[in-house]
Amino acid sequence: METPKKGKVRWPVMSVTIVLFVAMLIAIVVNAEKFYDILNNLVMNNLMWGLGWFVSLVCLFMVVICVIFLVTPLGKIKLGGPNAKPKFNYTQWFGISLCTGIGAGVVFWGAAEPLLFAMEPDPSTGLIAGSNGSVVWSMVHCFLQWGFTPYATCVVMGVILSYVILNKKAPFKASSCLIPLFGEGAENSKWATAFDAWSAFALTGAVAGGLGYGAMQLSAGIKAFAGIEPSKMIYIGIIIAMFICYNLSAISGLRNGITLLSNLNTRFFFILLIFVFLAGPTGYICNLFTHSLGAYLDQFFSASLYTAPFADAGRWAQNWDMYWWVDWMAYAPLLGLFMVRVGYGRTLREFVLVEWLFPALFGIVWFAVFGGTILHGQFFQGVDFYSIYINEGAEALTLAMFNVLPISKIAKIVMLIIITISLVTQCDSMAVTLAGMSMEGSDDTHEPPVWLKLFWGIVFAVIAMVFVVLGGINGVKTIKSFCGIPLTFMCFAILLGFLKYILKRPRKVNGEYEYEPEIANAPDNGEPMAHQDLIDKIFSKIFGEKAAD
Image (cartoon, rainbow, N blue to C red; front, top):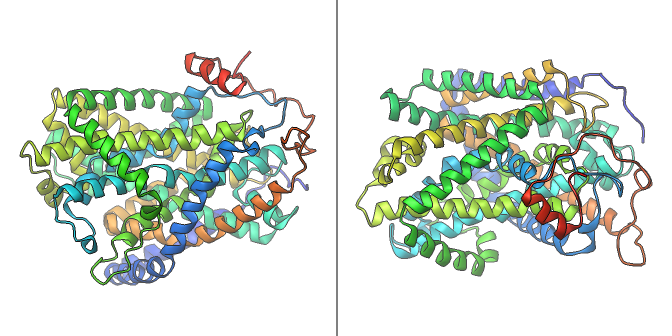
C-alpha cells in the first residue's frame, strides 16, 4: 500500500467545506427566507420524502450487522493484530464513547422529546394528544431515536475503518473505508479526496448544529440563574466560550483532554441520572420504562420502518425519525474514524459492545428517567410543561423539569456542567479527527498539528454562530439533513463492499478468521496501556483480554 508523504496538507478536503458554507452564508445574507424555503423544500419535501424510506432500511440493516458482529466469529478479530494490547480500559473507553457521541443529544432532548411526542403525536395515528396511547407511542419513538438504531450507523463505519486502518495499515482518513469496496489504491484516488471532503462538510454541519443546540440550552440556564433573556449576543458569547474550552482540550491531546473530561462527565451523567430516578417519581418511571420497553421490543421492526405515507401525517416520520437517521449519517464516517483511536487492541465484539450496545442502553434508560419525570409532572402533578415548550422552546424544558425535584438549583448546575463538557468533548474529538484527516500520512497514534485543530475549531464556532443567529434551529436541522442523505448511500455501498471482503477472508480450522499479513506477526505499537479497574477486570474475564499487565 502506497504511503503518502507525511506533513502535506490536504487542501481540497479543507477548502470544500469552507467554499460550500461561504456560498450558503452569501445566500442567507442576500435572502435568508428564500434560501431556507428552497433548501427546506429540497430536503424535507423532496429528498426526505423520496429517499427517507431507504435511509430507514439502511439503518435497520446496520443494527442487524452490529448483532452479527456480537454473536459470530467475526467478533473475535482483534484490531491491531494478535499481539496488540488495549490502551484504554473499559471505563475510559465507555466514557469517551458516551461523551463524544450521544451525550450532547440526550441532555437536550431527554425531557423534551417524550413530552413533545406525547402532546403532538403523528396525526395519522389517530392518537389523542396527552392520552395513554400517545405517551407509550412517544416513548417507543424516543427509544428508537436514541437507542440501538442511531449508534449503529457510526459503529458500523467505525468497525470498517478500524479494520482497514489498524489491520490493513491503511491511512488515517475516512476514505480508507473505500478499500474493501474498490480495492488497494482506492484511498489515494480523486474519489477518496471527494469522499473525505464531503464527509468533512457533513460533519462540520452536524457539529455546528450540535453546538448551536447547546448554546440555546445553555442560554436557558443563564436565564434561569441570572434572569437574562436569551438573545443573539448571548448565543454568540456562549459559542465563543465553548470555542475556547474545546480548543484548549484539543490542544492537550487525547489522553490529557478528551479522556479526562469524558470520564469526569460520565460520573456527572450517572450521578444526575440516579438523583432524578430516586428524587423523582420512581415508581412511575419504573412502570413507564417497563411498559414502554415492552412496546419498543414488540414494535421494533415496524417502528424502525415507520414512514407514515398518509395525507394527514404531516411528514412526521420524515421530520423526526428519518431526520435523526440522516443526522447520525452525517457523523458516521468521521465519528467512526475517531473510534479507531480508542479501539486498538480490542476485538470487534468488544468494539461493538462498548461503542454500540452500552451507549444505546444508556440512552434508553436516560430517556425513561427524564421522560418519565417530565410526563409525570405534566399529567399527575399539574405542571404545564407543554406551555413552557410552546413559549420558550425545547431548550428550556430540561431545566424546567428540575423544578419538580428537590435541590433543583444544584441539579440544574450539574446539568449545565454536563451540557458544557459534552459539547467540549464532542467538538474536541471531531476537530482532532478532522485535523488528522487533513494531513497526508497521518495515523491513529500521533496528534495532528495544533494549527489544524484550531482551524477546524474556528470553523465549527463560526458556522454555529451564523446559523443560530441567521437561521435558527430549523435552519441547522435542514443543513444537517442535506449533508447526511448522500452519505447514507455511500455508507451502505461501503458496508456491502466490506461484508463481501471480510466474508472471503481465509479461516482457521476452529472457524476464526486469519489475520491480515500486515499485522499477523506485528508487535504491539508500544503506546502505554491503561491500568485496570474493577469493571475492566470483570470484562477481562468475560473476553479473556487485559487492558494492562
